[in-house]
Amino acid sequence: MRPEDILVPTPAGVCCKLGGFYIDPTRPVERALITHAHSDHARSGHGAVLATRETLDLMRLRYGENFAGSTQAIRYGESLNLGGAIVTFHPAGHVLGSAQIAVAADGLRVVASGDYKNVTDPTCAPFELVLCDVFITEATFALPVFHHGSADAEIGKLLASVALFPERAHLVGAYSLGKAQRVIALLRNAGYGAPIYLHGAMESITRYYAERGTALGELRTVRGADKAALAGTITLCPPSALSDLWTRRFPDPLTAFASGWMRIRARARQYGVALPLVISDHADWEGLTATIATTGASEVWVTHGQEDALVHWCATRGLKARPLDIVGYGDEEEGGAEVAAEGGEAT
Image (cartoon, rainbow, N blue to C red):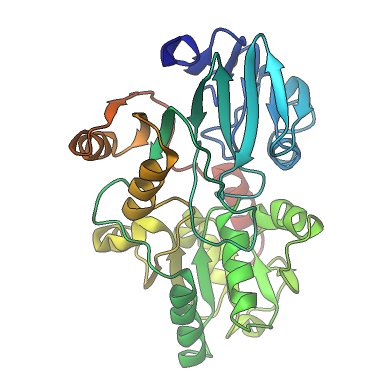
């Protein structure tokens, strides 16, 4: 059996004809297996969805109860036989509930990574290395320039700025699912005990993280807060809110952005960010290449990101590699409607 007899790339995403399903399809399909709840991987409208309990819960929060015709939860390490294809989900370390999906048949195993990182994150299960014959890897930060470094050190920069400018409000742009909660948890681990404020678009997901046992401390909504009282505080908001009228409710706001893209100074300037924080929920160049090398895979398929650079690296190591060129994946888009609604309230 060839790898293509187990999984094959199509315009709608990676398809398993044997099992009759797609992994993270980019358009509605009859049966979808979802790696995690970010909107570029988890879409509504599928006939049936198989995912971890956390991913299903987060999809309900984002899309409503009827986001799919039917749903089924699967635990990490649990095996399901779908038409002769043995499917297992394994922690990806990306966000809460995120999973790599392993598909095996006739002694051949293919692992679709989804998005992943192999560094410690207090808000989700750590990345689990899964040995395989073919590894389908993301490539979001697949260039040698991307070295994420220590997230704790970046949090230290934020806290130093808060101490230096106690009269200013610090606004931290972060994706609403995963990044925001990780930044809060890192702040708590660093000893920051003051209340942390949330943009309205982040409330439901952050509360869900807390309900699932993530220690986030005291959280408050910005809505209704007195402007003067917000001096010296930290507020988490979607990146798009940093340039919104919503920021006028804060005293002399100082903007920060937590993202792997902040490694590129031009990106920070593009967003008008005063304090770039290099904190990413994706593997950097060293993380990607180290993971590929340790999976034992002799063949690598590369998707959504800097595909050519990683394909070239694999070829120099004697690995068979190919780009999948599937359109529809990338940084998830923050909900403009949610931001507009929050920004439109009285300041």
